[in-house]
Image 1 (tube, rainbow, N blue to C red):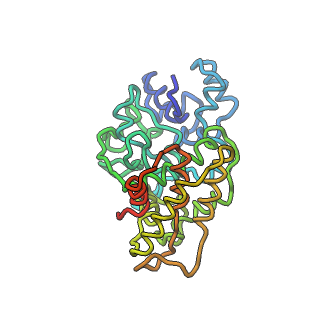
Image 2: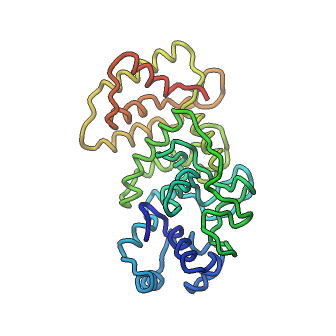
Image 3: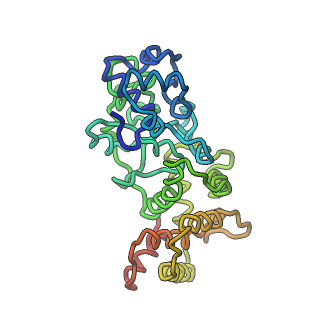
Length: 322
């Protein structure tokens, strides 16, 4: 049966293995051509194939819809369906080794297709987008042997054994905040502010990590570098004091109960706007102040920060050094 937030491609790969058919051969069983057959179905499932799955796999239309990806502005943030072997290039899917290792039935989540998603909320480690043995992307659709989809189709390495990478607390916090904004829209398929989507896509240029690529065109490691550039700044003493004051003020300010998501969208959109002439101390890249956004998100998540010492801890998250 499908698992919570499971991708359709993931379920199809598990279905193939359960029926004793390798991933590559299962395409013919469904009347499809080989290649990235299952990954494409995440984006668009034909009516004919949907009826076939409902008949023979005993699955409801609601379950199928819950595994496919919404067709709205969020789709611009999906990792593209392409195989790039360059170190900085994106792949179509990410995974958390610890999630796969603890799953009763290892499966790939829908949120792992988002370029804005960098960390696992459950385990707080960075997502992987390549096999740690051969450096190739996930390609269960091309598996020619009868192996579970969490084994590399190229070298047979078990993705559950991949090493763990941890990011600085500020990057994790930013990742979680962005996902909270897109989470409801991603699951429900509701509209998302298009200006924010464009500014998220332009983060590589904004941070100076890459001047020619969008966020969706970069690997997980390079996208993590973009996030680090956004939140991990070398501050001067005066700047630190201003940021501590800003965090405390934001945490102490009242937040409207209704339209809270719109508040976060506006704060993040404004923070990611290009501001010529401002640069981080000791560097030439643009200075992006996400203090108010992160602090407000923390307040809206009902994280109580009342004492001066805890406020200093909250500010430290925003200005941490990577």
